[in-house]
Structures are given as C-alpha cells and as structure tokens.
Image (cartoon, rainbow, N blue to C red):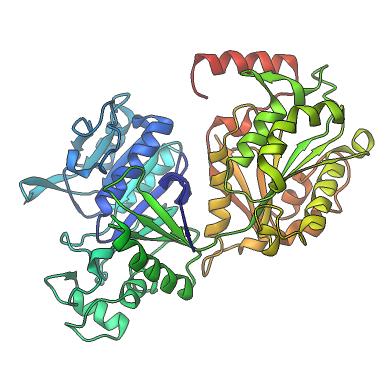
Length: 509
C-alpha cells in the first residue's frame, strides 16, 4: 500500500495563500520547517510566514531535517529565520509588510522561558492569523497549533488545538516511536485523555490502534478543524526499515477509519516524505493538442520552447506527474505531431495513448474532450493501460492544454492531491462530484481536474467552450487550489509567445 511519496508541499495540497496548522506530537516543528523550506525554495522565503497559536521554541538549525538545504544557501547551520515579537495585530501586519527579501519571518508575541537551552516564545491569536491571511493572499502561513511537551504522542485537551478559521489543511502528527511505550505521563501528553478516546487503560502499551484513533477521532488531533480544511494524518520518525512496517500498520488502521491516505515521514532524511499509505485516487489525464492555432499562424503544438515542441513538453510534464493513463488528442497536422511524440510514446509504453480527433476543425474543443474520454473508456478494460490503473475505478480526469509552456508536473500533482483529500469523511464536495481548479491572483487557470461524476456531462458538451460550461453549471462543486502564475500563462498569439519567453528569461514566473 505504500509508495515513494511526493514532496511534502504537494502531499499537503499547499500553495500560495495556504494556511497549514500542525497539531499532535512527535516532530511537528521539524515537519513545519521542512514544509517551510520546500515553500521557500519554490516561492522564496519572504512568501512564507511561520507562527504559532501556542508556545513554540525559537527556531534553530536543529529544526532542519537532516540533509535539508538552508533557506539562504548551504546545508545545516544557516537556517536564517528572523523572530519578530509583536504586541498587536497592527505590529504583526507591519512585520509582514517589512519582511526582508530572502529571509523567513517568524512571528510571536513574547518570550516565555526556555526548554533544553532554547528560548520559548508565545504565539499570536488565531484571529490575527485570519486577518494576515486575508490581507496577504499570496502568503503561505505555517502554524504550530498544538503543544506536546516534546513527547511522541498526545490527545488534545479541552482548549486544544488552537486552529485558525482560515486554515486550509490540518496536519495531525504522531511519532512512530510511541509504539510499545506505556500510555502514561512520561511518554504521552495528556495520557488520560487518549486512554478515554481509545478505550484503553492508563499504563497499557501504545498500539497502532491507539495512534490511529488519536489522529483521526473527531475529538483527536483534528478537533476544531474548520469546514473545508483537509485533515492529513502523518506518521513521523519513520527513520529506517524497522519503523517502516510498523508505520504502515498504523496507516492501514487510519485507512479503515476513513483517512484517504497517510503520510510517512522522517526528519532524518531529505526530502522528508518516506511514503504514502493508501492508493489515492486513480486519475487519468487528457492532453488537448488538436487545434489549428489560427491566431498563432503556426501550429502551437510544434512551437519550440527551450528546444522541444510545446506538445512534447506538456506530455512529458504530465507523464512526470502522479496521474496514471495519459491520452493525447491530436487533430491539426496529426502525423507531424505524432512523430514529435514518438520518443515519449516508446518510453511510456501502454501508459500513453495517442488518438486523433477527425472533427477537430468543426467540433471545437468539446469534440476533443469527447474523443479523449471515449479513448479512456475504451482502454478501461486493458489490464496494462496506465500501469494497471485500468483495473481500478477512475476517480477523475485532468485536462491539460498543450500551450502552457510553464506548466510543471507539480501543478498537476496539486490538483490530484486535492481530489485525494476530498475523499476524506465529511469532505464537501465528495471526490466524484468535485471540480478542482488552480487559481492565481483570483483568476482561475488550467489544467482542470473533473471528478468522475462529470464524465457523462463532459461527453455531451458542444462547441469550443470545453469544460467551462460544466464549471459554470456547478459552482458548488468547484474546489480552488492556490497556484502560481504558470497556470494562467498560455500561448495564443506570437505576441503571447514573445512576451512569455522574455518574462521567463528574466526569472521564474
């Protein structure tokens, strides 16, 4: 059930504007800073804010996972966060506005003692975090929302955890080293509460059932999760093969309780995700590459970007993502485009199929949607198509346009991860009835992922609108995922291409 996982940032569905609250025990701070590093590498350290709603140790090099890159270059010692203590929301806002480029900002309210030779600071009220998230919609905010007395396992008290209403993901953490320990105050934070939740007696040995219940129970580490926020259970300290099998067992118990997937992590390695328990959604992709490119005046599919045709780049990034089967729909200059794709076709084998929309010049983009969906349905009986995914029920399909040269596999992965999260209990909408759309600066972009509940409706759309009409008819189904400018950057004209190329040469979009 477990496989090599994605980056933490993708597994947690984190994008610009996300608010991620860490609860539980067993290495929350290390995982929080692992996520901070990944986000800083992707968007810059000044696009990330670290804070707490409880007490937190002042960050230092020991919070870095072993082997992780520094936030300002090198490995290890130069973490480079700047702790700013504020007395009011206005001061907190000014601290964010005045944050130094290239440096991670950590905000608290006051120093509050020491632990292990390190200073502690008190966090900020959750309402301040909500306001900062509103004022700075591109800022990723990472929140330590729980305390555990440096123990590997806990259950929350009546006042815990303290989760901001703006939270988009709750990360519930437990250390696998709790297995076999007595359920007592020396090894578990609030053991009497955990004993009550699990039906065990104080002093009993901690089992996989105990950990799973503490993470997933409605009164456990996800207690107080805002509506719409996903809950991701994480088993941390999976530092070697001897812990891996035990962690998988805990993951299986969580799946039985309704968790869609469970992350296995270790802060003694980089990247920190060791694996994922849970099959996750079976998602296919359809790459749309049939158009005649009339505004461009030349076939966009074969336009070279960094030395390769746009269609090859789009298909290569799609194959590098977490999707299973990939269908490419060709039309205009189908033979030439197929020739450009042949190396990828040989490499991908049965996972990739190329079909031709013979009606591409009359039926608009919707005809390519229908052709692609028909090809997926025809292939569903194949035991080899998509590396065996044909034997599983497809959860959704993501439509990828071939004219987005800045699109990366991680953009697609973020959509898949969000659909995956929609499989959890109480999620609205459910995965089958979800439409997952990337958003940047309040503008929706591409690609778009449709749950399988929309397959029939997509097969009946007409004209050149593609799936846009389906999105308009079902606003309640839309789940937005914060992303970067790449999801808006497409090429429709020579001016588009030249402008995008010039912008790309100046640095990341």
